[in-house]
Length: 465
Image 1 (cartoon, rainbow, N blue to C red):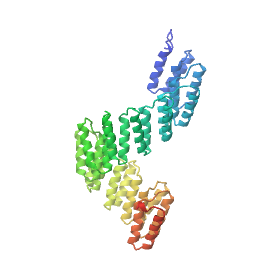
Image 2: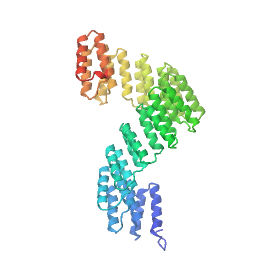
Image 3: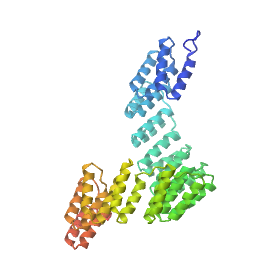
Image 4: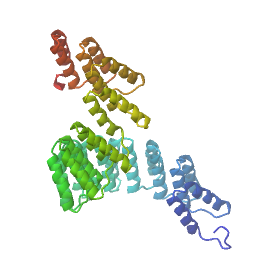
């Protein structure tokens, strides 16, 4: 095009640059735009907007603003695309406060912004967990003649749910309905999922009812959230009803649907029913993933059917589905509970050789197994290594070690560890206190038990036990 006798119009060059941006060849687009200018082809506002976009995606924000200065220098008027691209670039690279400052400067200079501008700013604020600020911005734009849309509401509703402010999210959703802003599947799915995660399945079903009334068709994500919620509150039979209803309503269950049901069934020891679902997956060509297998392996191990669990592990390898640390933790738990602690240690060494890093759950299972096998000294050595290496010791791990010390009658050491635990900012739970108090009473250490009880009452912690 540059070598043609009659130079094509600028919009033809812009088409090429746009195509390069769509395929993420940002550096090439920048290089070619410079080449154009070098040969005397003057960029228009579209060319310069493309250039700003490229710099923003590459994180070269200073260069992007230099192009804005160039736009003004050439006497062009920055349009909403120019301004929105710069706002998006700042937000994309975590410079949300600068994006807000730019927004204020732009308004002060009389430029106009649109729904895209504010949707971008709201998204940026939510990404940095400034949900309240995003909500305040939503309120402010209504006074500027810009109508909030479903994207803005969805972003804030999603952020409120992630902040576990589900009631606030529901109130905002009600506000959407009152303002006749059409909700989409994403809005409803966000609310259903958040409510279900809090165990509020009844409220989630109410949202589903509104969803159906509004003519929005639930998808597999909606049903999965609902099944997960029922399993969370141990109403697996109702989760099964939802699972069976999916097909009748024309929604095909996916691997996550099966994994949720398999996990729920295994938790209530209905392992054979879970295995039937695995067979159904095979029949329907739904490929099980690591979560599916891990749930089944855990169920089999807890039911004492370890040989069957090992067979499933072999099947995972044969299918090319990689086991993870959660998969192996189930085997470790079964080995430790059946007093094969040394085999458990060998398993940990084996998975480390495979490049799988044990997590705190792995070590907690091992420490519990060692303590129950009367090998407190070994458990203490491993615990000390974890502390030295800077592992984040959680309440469950501390409780296991306190229990091990109490079993050996080492109450002073147990109380010292309780004190260390609290000093480290790890709050004891009901099981921690129960473990110590029960052991003290059991060993006839009534004075120490009563002293600890008085301390718990004085600190207002009695309701925890």
